Length: 55
Image (cartoon, rainbow, N blue to C red):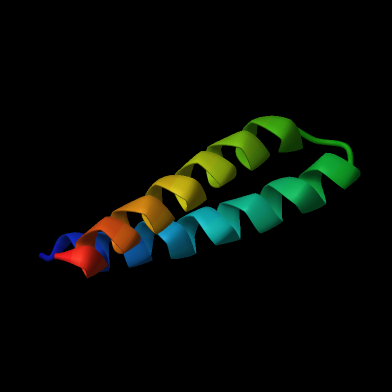
């Protein structure tokens, strides 16, 4: 599986986790941890997709 595709999948999952974490952060729940994990996955996925695009 190409690095660019893995990055795109990771970025999509990170975006969903970030959105879910933001909603849970506003509502009572463990939203901050999900938000941080989602942002980390989103940034990592974007970097991987950009690195795969240059090759």
